Image (cartoon, rainbow, N blue to C red; front, side, top):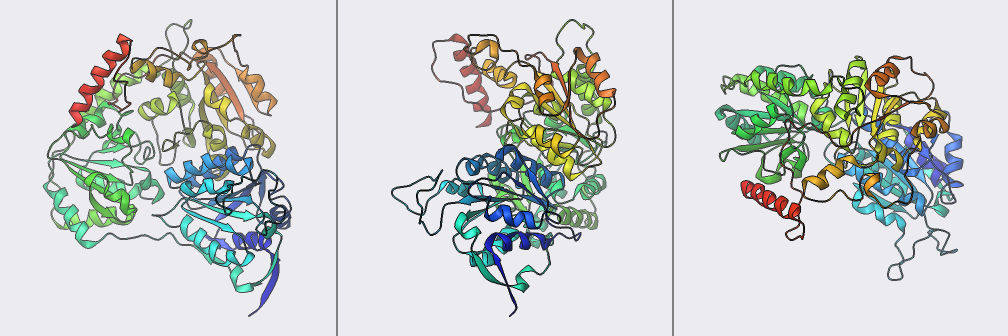
Length: 610
C-alpha cells in the first residue's frame, strides 16, 4: 500500500478537494474561515497550500459566514456545499445557530471548529469550557443536537472513517444536513501515513429512493377515490429537482397546487393550477381549497405549523393526508399515509400509474378563487396615492416586483417580509424565491444573499431585510464588498420589530419592547443605515417613498459590490386578505381586559381544531 505523510488538517483538505458531485464539480466549493488559536496553525497552513483549487473566504462573523455557506447550498438545491472553520470557544459557538438553521432546513454544510488538545497537556487552554463531571466535553458538544453527524477527531486516522460518513450524510436525500467535525488543535498538526487511495476522486450521486410498491398502490387508490384533492408543494420539490415532474403530474390530473414558503416557485405564479401560498401566511384561494379538501397530498413538506395553520386548516372530517417524502419520519407525521421516496421519481411514477388506471376524475378547482385573490391583494402593492404617508411593506414589495427581471431571485428570512412575500410575490420561475422560514433566523438575510450570488453569479439577487434583522447581523456586507460580490439590499426601516409588535397586539398584549418608541430608552435612536452600509463598503442611499425606491432600483447597480437602499416604512399595516389561525398561546389570566378577550378568542379557535 502506497502512503503519503500529511498532517490531519492537510489530509482533510486534500480529501475535500477529491469529492465530486454528479456534474464532476467539487462538492465542497470553498471554505469560509475565521482563524484563531484553535485552527490558524493546522487548518490555516493546510488551506493556504490548496488556496488555488479549494478557495478560502474570510468572513467577519462566524454565524454570518456559515449562513452564506448554507444559502449557497440551498440555492444550488443541495448539489454543492461549503465548509466553515473557526477557532474553539466563541468562534465555534457562534456557528451553533447556523447549524440549527441548516438542520431544520435539511441543508448540507461542513462545520470544522477547532477543539481542545486531545493530549490534554496544556488544559485548560484559552476559551476552553470545562465540565468537572465529564472530561470529554468541550464547547463543540453544543453542536450535537443540531448536527446530522457529529464527531470529535482525537487521532488523525479517525478521519479515515469520519470523512466518508460526513459526505454520506451531506449527500443523502433523507439524512441531509449539517455535519460537525470537532478538530482537536494538536491533532490538526499531527502527521500520519495516509493511504494514497483515500484521496482518489469520488463522485457522490444523488440517490433516488423509490417508494414501497404497496405504499404507492394505496396512494393511487386514495387519489382515484378523491373528489376534492389538493397538492401541497414543499421544499423537497426543489431539492429533488422535481418542479417539472410536479407540473406534469398536476396537469395530467387537473390537480390544484398550493405552496409552502420553501416550496414557493415550484410552479410559476400564473400557472392556472397554482392557487398560491398556503397556511398562516397563505392566500384565501389556497386555504379555501385546503379547508374543503378530502385528500391532501404533501410533496416534500415537513407540515410545519405555518403550513397547516397549526393543524386547523384541513377541516374536512373525512380527509386523507398523504405525505410523499424521502424522510420516513416526515412521511408519517400526524398519521399521514406514507409514500416514502424521492419526489421526482414518485411523481413521475404516479403520473404513469394513474394514467394506466384511467386518471383522476375529481372536481376541477374553481379558477375564480384565484381571480378573487389577486383582485384583493394586487391593489396593495400599487404606489400610494398619498405620498405624505409612510409606505407599507406591501408597497415596497410592489416596487421591487416591478423592477424585477427574469433572472431576479428575491430572498428573506425573518420579520414582516416573509409573510408578505409569501402572499404577494409573483415568482415567475423555479428558484426565483429563496426564503429561509424553517428556522426564520434573523440575520440570515445579508449573509444569505452573499451565498446565493456566489452560487448563481448570473442572477440578480435582491435581499429584503428589516432594520431589526439588519442590526442583528450585517457584517457579511463587508465580506461581499471585499470579495466584489454584487447584490441589492432593500432595508425597510420601521424602527423596531414590527412583525412581533403586531403579534403582541393581536394576542391582547400592550405594545412593549418591540418598536423602539415602546422600549426603555433615554435617547431617541435613529440609525443612519445608509451611512453604516457605506462604511462597510456598499453603495448606499436612503430614499424618500416608493417613487424614490423605484428610481433607485431603476438606476444601474454597481457590478463589484453590494447596493443598499433604505426606506422608512409603516410598522402597522399587514395584508388582511388570506391567512389562517396560528397557535400562539395567550395567557389564561391577566388584569388586562384585552388579554382576557384575546384568550376567549384563542380558546374558541382551539375548540375548532379538537
